[in-house]
Length: 248
Image (tube, rainbow, N blue to C red; front, side, top):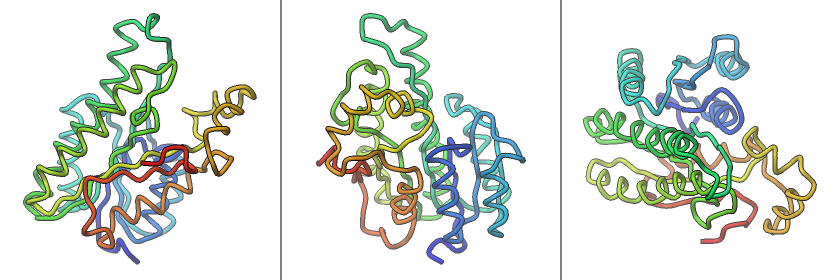
């Protein structure tokens, strides 16, 4: 298996893309640290990944709190001795037109999506630098690459993730740590408003050459690839998993 002996942290792991990626990583042999604000032992992702037979640790973490993130990495090192991959997936969306968004609506989206991504990268960097190896996969979106109507706070955060990842890739390359991003378009709780509204759905599908929304399970293989040694010469790149909606 491609990830046998590797340890992966997955944030936003309790559902959607995080859950699908956790399953994909476990199926390739990785030991897992499953992270979200509300994850519990009886959650499906915990039960199913444990069935596969690898070590699974769960941790409730608000990624927008740097102290909680630091503790998350400490617990990982204490239990597994290393961290090989970070899938920075935790995120929220609070839509609104620019002139209607209040400070709290703005701040919370950036706190989780942008600050949280940074705190997690920063926290895993030290043990990865000591190992002289590691792979960080951050989640951006088409909104962060192209802009979108009604989500200027989310667009700002995800655009920041895209740009920040390139700087991190340059800074960490000397330590053999790779930093890449994915930009998925999959049916999740965050996108169900679009997928379930006929007008929104029609407009979005017109922008997707393959003519459908993706599934969370279709994101997993790309993350497995970026977490594995098969992508050892790839850093600072973005993979759009969106049916051709964004072509860089």
